[in-house]
Length: 293
Image (cartoon, rainbow, N blue to C red):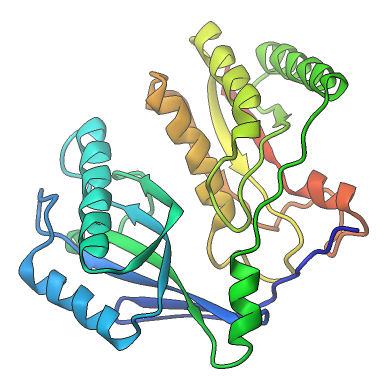
């Protein structure tokens, strides 16, 4: 029998570059911001000192995600590259200074495509997400964090059914009218993450082909999550929609044809808490809103 760990977020706090999410399953996920000089991919000395000071206070932290951002000056393509280079710079600095970074850590460069601050210097940053054990239950928490992700094999019959579902998506989205919403099925993410797992590649490619074959099609990618009774503090639904946006842009789809938005738990198909795994899966979805066709 599969066990489900339900995490209830108790509070969200941001102070002096730190943000903290406290959960009841025994560990704290926090974030730390590193700021960059204008148009620079390199960390300046004061920020390096800040990182070292942060790490010296708790050398047992483990980094799970590194996200890069830019201000709006420059082209979209340039800022995408700059944000990725900032992520790489921070990663290399952490490794050089013996900070533990997960082998499968999540690295995303958002460029200028995020909710920009009115203060431009606040947009030139990298955010480090890290796990920090709470004061109690350390042993059990570590086991929980290191629990492997199990991906069940899909047999040939299931794959054939999936292909049929994807064809249905293609037909629906190609014939859709402005304002129609079509669910993009078989898109899977790692738990509490925007990292798309490999089993989603067929559906992503299906969406890419639809965009390539319908040059007048403009869409909004809409992300939804399940299971939580409180606000999506980490904005996972937006980050997941953004991940699909990045996939399309990286595959030469004009970014002017794509918008993305996360709705968290505000538009569930079934009331939360869900009654069974099927309702959870139907609430945890990605939808495509047709803007022009």
